[in-house]
Length: 215
Ligand code: G3P
Image (cartoon, rainbow, N blue to C red; front, top):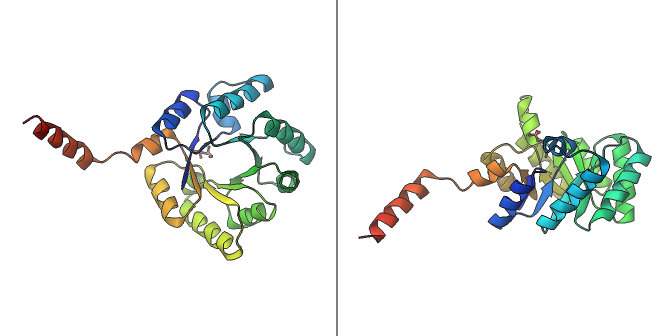
């Protein structure tokens, strides 16, 4: 299972990369705004800075909602760096754009996916990744993990190669459950990755070992 970090914060990306378990990065316009990155030139430079920290795929999202605009933006993003994956929202124009990018050999991440039907469309259009937002489904009393299970079943039924990228991950149990179901990727806040490390018996066991080592 691949671990992506879901942030545009360079320090957190570096910390996850240094841990040695990072396979990629996802960003979105809200995460870029949170870091105060404004203006086209600064945004493009920030994507390149991220690519220079990590070795894996880096999702960069288009903000146009029409086909022509998505194509123009996506082609510019893809030219920035070979690690860039163009993130496209699950709307009608987005499906058309994903199909276009697929035919051009440009990799895509279909974002804002909240149903199995949307995930099926993304796979048919040839998306490299599909991003179901599990935390936001949980927020509205709908089990996000059930959606991951449904997409896994559908993709396995037909051999779709689109990778399931569980997004809007909020805590370590989301990561563990996604791993059990067979999501290909989880994109997580750094806090959720670090939380996987923690166990009180590890801490107390280590304290005892160190105490005994001194005897
Ligand atoms: O990967 C999508 C993510 O950025 C959304 O997360 O926590 O805003 O629902 P959240």
